[in-house]
Length: 556
Image (cartoon, rainbow, N blue to C red; front, side, top):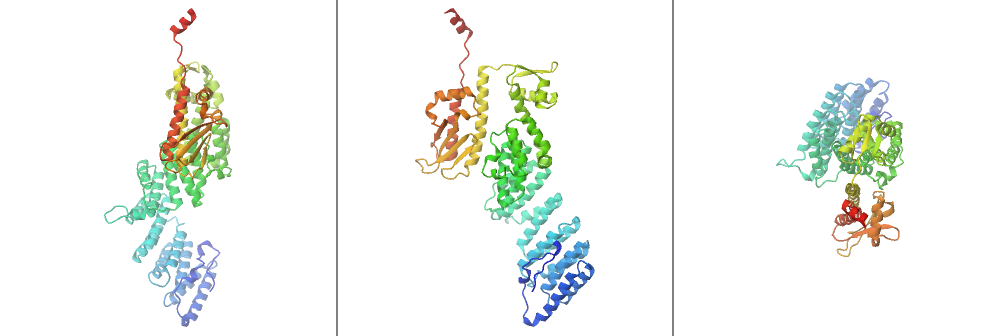
């Protein structure tokens, strides 16, 4: 018996369908051959004379007694052909007849499921919502009648995804309620044994809430997804959940949390082989820039292979320009890569925040040597209008990042010199922020460390080795090349070298170790605390000489 193939997509059949039927004994072989010939003759006339094909398929259905595989296959063809001809009422009639074949033992359950899924995928291209609703409801009623719970659930999930993609949220909510009800215990609580299905339902609702920008419900549901037990979800599902979580955090300007979620989403999509990994990697880079991270997002082993991907390369160049504070190059990359960057509505929403960040960084660098600077000059250097410069300066003054006043009449910024104490605390604050970012990154990376593995985090290196008690990999060693530490002012580096020469190895690395606690995270935190104390000690500036002391010195 030949396989049932077609050139047209709507006629494609499963290649193994010929083997899934209960055949009659050899006495019925001749009638089967006759029906087979009529079936293939009908198929041959589909393109040239679809109405004749429908009549011939109907003849196969009417002739076959008892009902069997050729009638079932004919009804499949009739359902698809009538749909292609936009005869939706006939499509539904033929489909109902086809479903009748699934209620007995005429065909196997596996083949019935494949056929139903195939037809549902085919008709889902329709824009007639009423027809689609009737079609799926007919399917679900039959599945409930035959107690095929597995396919009932899969069909509802398919319908829910269809309504989600089309923005039919009222219809989607109706399906979600039915799906949630199927995951409840008798007392109304969620059946945690159905954790995998629950996560799939959560993923659908989370996507809907993200589109609706309903952050209150989204946050509550997102937190529930992170506490589902007994679940082995498909990585694509977790990718969807973490991506929506990242978008939620972005809307709340929680850049660091967003960066973590986008990274997790990227890893899950990558594992699932989903093309959405590329888009999620772009979002990861976006969050990385917004949090002013010193760490290049393409330094990790997971993202590095995509660094030079054609779709990602513009983002790679963008983050490099951002970390160099090269405004003109940054803006040029945005202009030259509209399709890969600015055409995404989500990225476009936050790109102004990124531009503000890079302009603010460059503005701070630009005005640092001056006590007075003309705003038109700054405007030209930043390539923005003077009123934008004034707005940035006001933010810096209000955030206590600079001390000064704006003379709007003369169009200039007048800066006040900071006291030694202010300079000291400003340096410590800046350093503390850098260490905080570094520490959080280290904690995130260490969750997947293998024995004695070393992870370079920008200019820092972390090593985890065996401690004496307990004999597990909890001992932490942190080290960095003191002279290459761009996040420390040179005078503080000199003071550290002077006060802590015993902690500097032959390679010029400043080394701190800890095995005080029983966990990697605690020992890492202890190392950071020790390093912080070292920086504070080196940051203390000598007190300014009092006028009385200066007078006594002059009299000597």
